[in-house]
Length: 231
Image (spheres, rainbow, N blue to C red):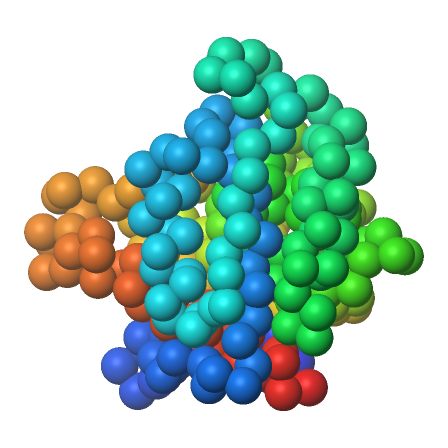
């Protein structure tokens, strides 16, 4: 029997698909601050595609993207430790809050950007309505589970993970989610890797497409954000 509280279970319909959601109503008009991952800037095809999907499905007033300093200037450098990016990221959040007073803020991020976003959400002078983690890197380079930041969260948190993401084994994430004090949900992209890419054979075997999988994920995100803003 599943002992996980109802608020922490994935929401499924009769055919075991995550329930779809209509776009959020205009009066909520959230603003999303969307951080890139370690290896590609905010101008990457992946970031641009997800920025567009999030803006449309969440009916967002804006989706703000940015490049961390190590990525700016067109030079590809190794990222510093996530902790060293927190101040820069938090300043972007504060600037956005000033620009959009009264709008609920959603911190979203791909991989490393989601981890830094969670650190920012834990800051005392930051007020956000929800956190969205797209491919959270739960495992560090040495294989250790990095759950400290997640266990400190108090704001609603949504995870979207590929089932074949080696940086976030689902069983380890489930253990972490059960220990979290924040309301949290998980949407799994079946067959997806760390960037949600699904192999052609897997798609053919399941009679599905990459676009369908990503649309289902964004609809699950919209349902979670809508619920979180109503709290």
